[in-house]
Length: 245
Ligand SMILES: NC(=O)C1=CN([C@@H]2O[C@H](COP(=O)(O)OP(=O)(O)OC[C@H]3O[C@@H](n4cnc5c(N)ncnc54)[C@H](OP(=O)(O)O)[C@@H]3O)[C@@H](O)[C@H]2O)C=CC1
Ligand SMILES: O=C(O)C1=N[C@H](C(=O)O)C[C@H](O)C1
Image (cartoon, rainbow, N blue to C red):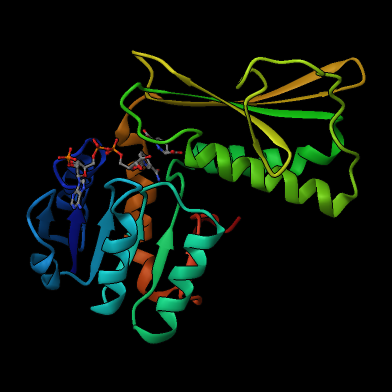
């Protein structure tokens, strides 16, 4: 039995993770912790799953590493500086960390297809749409997608994107993530959606993914909980390697 602790257990994702862990073979919900509860109950867990808030996730993660508890992190807001901090903590502590901006299988495939397609088109932009209660913009998935697109284009020696804009209202061209434009829509009725639009000579190619509910993330979360202890690296980004991608 893998003993699992959930951080952010009363939140939209955390509550779903508690259900998924209870339903999963070979797993037991050892602790369900939310705002104001204190972290001590998590010492009963071998793996902690964090779906909290970008503002608190670093403290949570540092605590897990210090206590030698494996961590599966879905909370967003990770940039290169934050990942460097996690790597430095891992030099001292025990336990593995897996951080994934998206646990949806389709979303992971969309990111990989975008990476593959990006060097073949003159223009590539990312448009994400989320529920209006989301704290961060652009989404972690959109940031990661843009980083993958930028890396693939740099490796292929692709030209900069054509864009003659010389006057624009603030934000009209979206955020610049390593040179890739990322547009964030916040919309009642939405859950989590993303389009990657690629344009070339007389053609447009659109990759689209829609998360219709939060249950859709659970197969990826459960897989990560099962695998995190045995991963070859102390820090793993994304569930691609667990899916054989
Ligand atoms: N990787 C992925 O596949 C996915 C990632 N996410 C990400 O997960 C995160 C959470 O999203 P969501 O579930 O919608 O957010 P919610 O706001 O619904 O849930 C977050 C929960 O964490 C609680 N919380 C806040 N601070 C702490 C703390 N210090 N210790 C313990 N609990 C705390 C909140 O309490 P309170 O409300 O009182 O502040 C709340 O109950 C976001 O970063 C989101 O982007 C979401 C979906 C999928
Ligand atoms: O806040 C959300 O809801 C989601 N957050 C993640 C992100 O920022 O990419 C994953 C998914 O898009 C849902």
